[in-house]
Image (cartoon, one colour):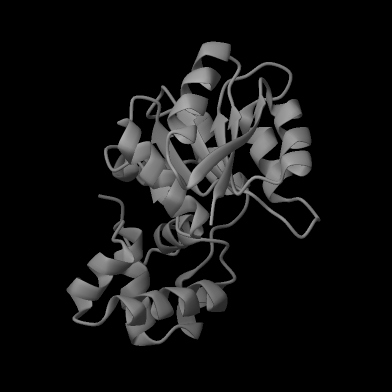
Length: 221
């Protein structure tokens, strides 16, 4: 199955570069481009991409608001958003994860890693740049927020094994790594993750990571 990609960036040369890279993969295709967040929302509805490569800082509407509108859409098709930025601690990124982004990578990520990330996001997993994951989560948890954070009691719906799985997901382990750590098959690990997602009403693994830290199941660092 071909994965449709919408490229969003206010620089034409950057968009052109991403288009060439994405179209070079046999299982990926660029279905549209947008130069700002407002156009991205329109293009996402019209082109129905599987994944949106979203820049953060853009005119008219930034990537944060565009991400929120795209992921909160009422239609039957909700693209997944992969944030791409030149700033590994860009404050917009924290809010973008809350807004519904499924992944975060730096623009200097090697081409093959970016293509792999698109496939991971399209497959329903979440992805954070390994070099910034700990700082990102630590900063996210440490920020002052008006809304009360969920208590550990919200995890009572999980079995002991599922809590263990959640803690490992929060450390950034993939399904294959989970399987190795817990001495089970990859299929079983994937089933556990799916059950945790369902029980906690989480959209994807990114939300699981945030929830694990906010409830105190896992401590930053």
